Length: 396
Image (cartoon, rainbow, N blue to C red; front, side, top):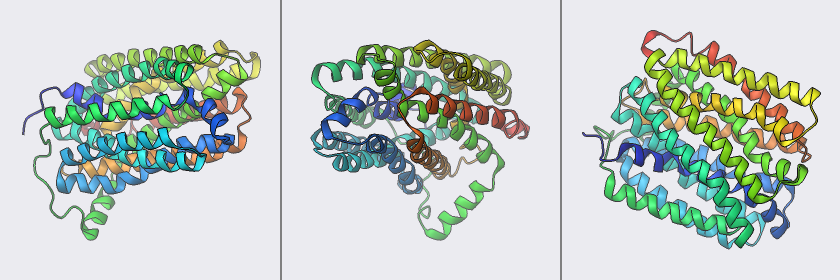
């Protein structure tokens, strides 16, 4: 087995499909709600239902990837993502859009899950964390472009135009994987999908401390990101009065911050290793939590008072995400697909639950978003400083 010709580019295409499905969609949410006559809860559901499909599907994709290999699932997932994007464009009701977005999440699950597993196929735990950080830099570039592109296409052609970008990206990713990716799994597991074998594999993974430490780190840091993603367009464009291009520029600045953090993560990993790097990220997360609460209590709501603490969160997220996603599959070189799928499943189930809860408190103001992000920032710091630090030397 050899690493494929363009590992960073390939991994970026695999995991970068997720921000494309979320960040590019954000400027379209207000226009979509008005055009389809959707309620605020239905608008949120188009995002959270996609993520639920994304999470649940990985329980199936994981053992399939161990049984049949990564390449066929990657090709299937990219094609499905493009077809679902076409369905999004043609939706004429909120219910139709929720269904097509859910199908898009299911297809995306195959791509992202295989991306995490491929990293473990290619590298040891330390190398996997560094390669994941490099791929996350590429993901940040995609996310950085999504804000301006989404805002521009919405302002010129309307909300449906963002879905055409999904179609184009899905087809380009399919072509890149078809011509540039050689199967990465060393040996397929012919019994991986048998119920008894699958349950035994899941039990072994769920009993491992490193899986829960890095899995909870990934869940917590993504929790705050999801709250921001699902609420920010309404807060900044409706409550604080930003135009679509201005909101796109704001998302651009967040992504630029994220890219900076992934570059910092790579340097920290080389100098300090995984566990100490995660602890440093925890300091940034806690700084975000405290500054969000103080800003909410004492500073009138404005773009600056909301975003300044969020930038600290993004800096921490750029450290926790690559370390968490590589760390949760690191102990399972022979079941990387199953471990990746379980990690993705729990992450998206929590995100879906957050979407349901935040919908009851959402009033369009910055308060639910600020306090929600602060809560998950604090939880991320606690996990970084406790569960991850208690792991043995083999895990960082």
